[in-house]
Amino acid sequence: MASLTSFTDEARIALDTLTGRAATMFSSPSLRLGVTGLSRAGKTVFITALVHNLIHGGRLPLFEARKSGRISRARLEEQPDDAVPRFQYEDHVEALVNARIWPDSTRAISELRLTVEYESASGWNRMFSSGRLAIDIVDYPGEWLLDLPLLGKDFREFSKEAVDLAALPVRADLAAQWRELAVTVDPDADADEMTARRLAEAFAGYLRACKLDERALSTLPPGRFLMPGDLDGSPALTFSPLVLGDGKPARSGSLQAMMERRYEAYKTHVIKPFFREHVARLDRQIVLVDALQALNAGPWAMADLERALGEILACFRIGRGGFLTDFFSHRIDRILVAATKADHLHHESHDRLQAIVKRIADRAVKRADLTGAEVDVLAMAAVRATREGTVKHGREELPVIIGTPLKGETIGDEVFDGKTETAVFPGDLPARTDSAFETASGEIGENAIRFVRFRPPKLERTADGVTLSLPHIRLDRAMQFLLGDRLA
Image (cartoon, rainbow, N blue to C red; front, side, top):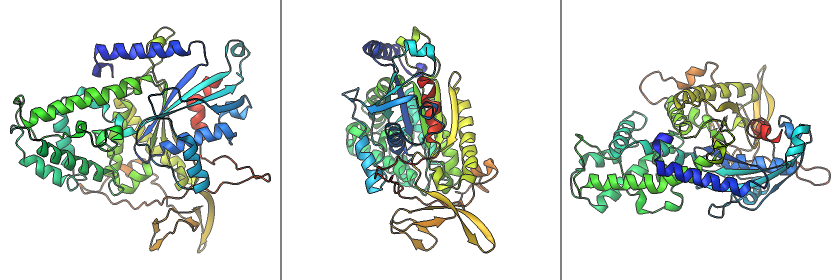
């Protein structure tokens, strides 16, 4: 990303980092953990489950500091940054535990500070360590990360890529209204606010249609068109790609000049501050991937997910810092790519889900050149909504998952009411990983795999009436990779 930022940007990042380091020099060490993923990948649920299990002593056998009993306490602290909204942990726990509904998706940036008190496993470290680690969890939409590559593209490059993507078979029908409008517009005509508005609304509508379950596409910049946050309704989002001909510069006062100016303003006033104030300050990162939604939609969606993940990974500042350089910059030295909703499959398919996401991640890592960072991939469920069982079908015993489908979910002709528990045979993921990415022709693929969504689980209580922590699948392994070495 250094090539996409100016000297002034880098100086501001260094000053911000130095100021933050100085403020915490004589207090507890801190770790900034970024949590991202495209919408409905489970960011809010992951953060809530991580904090809940740490505070309430959840079952975390693969998280060494908890397993060995070295963590004495974990507690929430005051929000560290007054300019950033607090992650509403208490509201999300209420939704999951009591209402048994999934909390609202991430719509903007939020933060939460969790302080863990622990005893170091090393006698030497116990002499010099405070035995406290402040974990600043930063939650932000993955759609906004997809904007960062725009910093290296001018308006003409942005327009060409958008036009080419919109012409793909999986997108062409969804983009029809915007494409029909764009080809009738003369970029050299006088700038007109209503024309700009119609183009922007049609383009945003096309991007929103791409996100729906039927297509489940992922590469959809500009991200604020989908997740506007505090820019909802702002003139800053009233621009659109154009169908441009030759490479002559835009005429002053033309529609093209207006669009170029607003595009550059979007980069300067929206994308750069987001990168400088949030992404450039991260130490660790988890990227959550809803591969099941893409598998439902078919190979086109899988290929688009791979493209999006590559662009997301390329946005991070990677590497291991030194004693002096750490005062002026943050570097991400560990990235976890996690396939979520593993509880929608029987455990026999977890390895296949992990292999599919590893294939996506390996290609994305290679393109993004993440030399200097440790990358891991796993299949997980931060909150496990199902349990496993078997049912007899003739002479066969089929592995099933048991849970309460969300209201309106269907299996065959049956429509669920959100109250009835049922056993579901989820089917098998393909044994050959590449088949998840293949189409028989150029047409949009129809995938035979279908997954239903379940309500959060009803939590067990002890004999004393104490509610147990949220169940999970491999959340402890994720925590060990992201936090374990800092609690050693």
